[in-house]
Amino acid sequence: MSIQTISTKPFQDQKPGTSGLRKRVTVFQAAHYLENFVQSIFDAIAAPAGATLVVGGDGRYYNREAIQVILKMAAANGFGKVLVGQDGILSTPAASCVIRKYQTYGGIILSASHNPGGPEGDFGIKYNTANGGPAPEKVTEGIFARSKSISAYKIVDAADVALDVLGTTELAGMQVQVIDAVADYAELMESLFDFAAIRQLLASGFRIRFDAMHAVTGPYARAILVDKLGAEADAVLNATPLPDFGGGHPDPNLTYAHDLVEIMYGADAPDFGAASDGDGDRNMILGQRFFVTPSDSLALMAANARLVPAYAKGIAGVARSMPTSAAVDRVAEELDIPCYETPTGWKFFGNLMDAGKVTLCGEESFGTGSDHVREKDGLWAVLFWLNILAIKRQPVETLVKRHWAQFGRNVYSRHDYEELPSDVANALITHVRDSFTTLVGQRFGNYEVKTCDDFSYTDPVDGSVSHKQGVRILFVDGSRIVFRLSGTGTEGATLRIYLEAYETDRTKHDLDAQDALAEMITIADQITGLKQRTGREQPTVIT
Ligand code: G1P
Ligand code: ZN
Image (cartoon, rainbow, N blue to C red):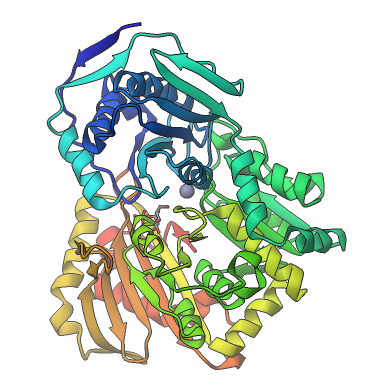
């Protein structure tokens, strides 16, 4: 088997976004496209000879082909060993778990998360460092810089490696160890939660449904919820991972997780419902006919963390992304622990967790997690909720409403406008920025603008600064509207509008969020000229 050095030319568009490089499958299939990016990773990280890498993905279309290329390139680039999930599968949190447990140099995760898959869908690739978390910006910038100057990549000329059988084989002097994709992760979950209490809850007639959305969490949910915790076999919906996710959009929200939503809002609804996304890092939590916003979910977890064995001694601090509601801030205040506000994207939580400053963190985009790994973790969140419910024995809705009664309710919603022309979306953001000085002090109905800014973040651990992380309009009463352009889309631009108001009046806690936020929604349109600029009457997705 010989190492080949293949000449190539740079692609100009290999800049990693919020979470790695995401493009259409067809883009990745273009000659040298994947190889260039993988070589750029290897060049940028400069791992010592003989280092160990983890490789796995969410099983979407092109996963298998890409893994074979990565293995052959890892061998040619001097890695000593690669741990790869059986059949090339590892959920994103499981990959993080494996990197940490076996103390590898890093890992490559293949996923486009919640974006649709299949030949016409999306593919993605990202690099995680030795702490198990997404590479920080200085690393992703190094990869991007390399991708713009690359002139050759190395790959061994060898047959494909069989990934269906557990065990170790050799590829041009490099060991390839095929590992059980679920076992290490399941063991970690068992060490964190009170499985006995959850088992009792499920045995008591408490019914759950978990929608794996034909994505990676099916096998994980079966192994943990059904085999270990005794949930009924039909508790896991859409449990077989498919390369195109059954033609669905594997994003756990009220729009896309429709199978689950129908059940949870139907007659004889189960007590608890949850869903996860393409690569298993997101989660949605539902009660009987009740939706828990991800921001509230984070706050509730923080408030009840002591009920979970792993967090029984208390949590060091919490963190949330800036657009996430301030519900968790109120819990942090009550617990007298620090609360950090970071830019959007999980990579900003890593330093805080490594430094022991935070234990729990989350984002409004259906992501919650803790320092047990360095990714957000869908099934972990589901188990966290089940653990709380096993101790509290209250319906989900009661639990949330009691939380609001104690802390007040941060009424919250996100409106997404997908596939806008990039110039229209950019002009809209620029317009808001240019209006800052005239907006301050301006009244809109019941609301008065207090300040406006462009969110910047200075990492308290390494001092790195990230600018332009979202445009904020902050009102006198604590309400706010935030505008941001997505960093994960692959077609045109996606505008995200985050709306938040704070309500202490318990008699108003039953209001639907869209009704409670109606005036703010109008103000967002007035400030941006959104309808007129985009020609859109409605958001594409409301969460
Ligand atoms: C979106 C979410 C963000 C999350 C990321 C990866 O990024 O908003 O919170 O970390 O997906 O799952 P965006 O498309 O907004 O850049
Ligand atoms: Zn994801």
